[in-house]
Amino acid sequence: MTVHILRRAFRVDSLDDLKRSQKESMDAERAAGRPRRLYRRMRTTPTRTQEILDGGSIYWVIKGYVRARQRILEIESRMDNEGRKRCFLRLSAKLVPTVLHPCKPRRGWRYLTPPDAPVDLPLAKHRFDDELPLDMEVELRELGLL
Image 1 (cartoon, helix red, strand yellow):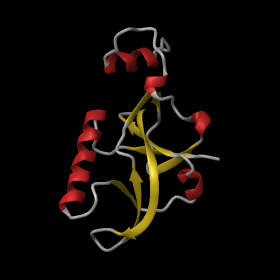
Image 2 (cartoon, rainbow, N blue to C red; image 1 turned 30 degrees about the vertical axis):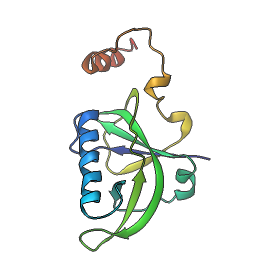
Image 3 (cartoon, rainbow, N blue to C red; image 1 turned 90 degrees about the horizontal axis):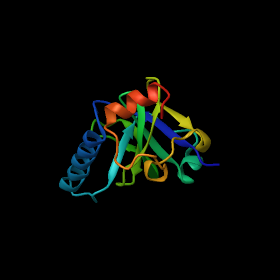
Image 4 (cartoon, rainbow, N blue to C red; image 1 turned 45 degrees about the vertical axis):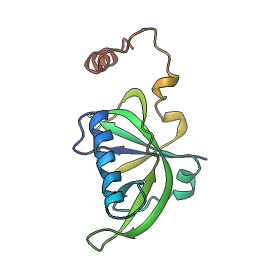
């Protein structure tokens, strides 16, 4: 059974910030002479590795809401720049926006089962023709109107 990882995006205020920081990370990989791949370093290795690699994604929590996900392609253990053994998740470069889903702040990462995962935004059909401004959508969701 597939599981996903729920992870808070630190020092990120929006999806654009996340995209920019990931682009910088991929550019740094290329500058170091490695293939231009996207990695997210974590302190510990997930215990449910096989379930994650069976189609799992990392769901990003930004400003109290799950806002996007990325497919996890590979999980590997290796040394970081400081010589400590870390877990590196290789992620797909494609960032898929999701329907805003409130999430309480917590440290580290948590597992998320597919039925509990927010729906991808392109798959969620709104009754609005134009996209709502993010602040308005957050407020309408908090009021239970969306």
